[in-house]
Length: 137
Image 1 (tube, one colour):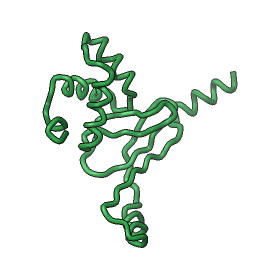
Image 2 (cartoon, helix red, strand yellow; image 1 turned 45 degrees about the horizontal axis):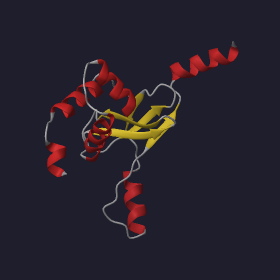
Image 3 (cartoon, helix red, strand yellow; image 1 turned 135 degrees about the vertical axis):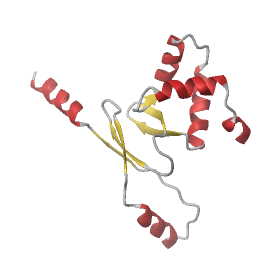
């Protein structure tokens, strides 16, 4: 498995290329649709497997929202957190001052090799305006 994740196959390059076109999160099925539009014969199972490999090796981010699992290429290296619009998927990487707290809570309970995920979900200003306009009409 380790070798497969680091091997640069045509499928992985194609998937990375489509992911790179969007700074926001995209679902696996949408990604698969975009690949098919380009004439790719990559199957949906391969898309899911490749996305999970990218996430496992910190090359892609994933979050689970109302639309299921969503993916995007990591915009920065190292550990980071996201502010995500639940309407349009717009994503902003944010610094969260919680690392010390996470380490302290883990140590207090005897946990080691700790990892965590923090995604803050909300509605971006553009979507909030659109939703307000829709509810007024």
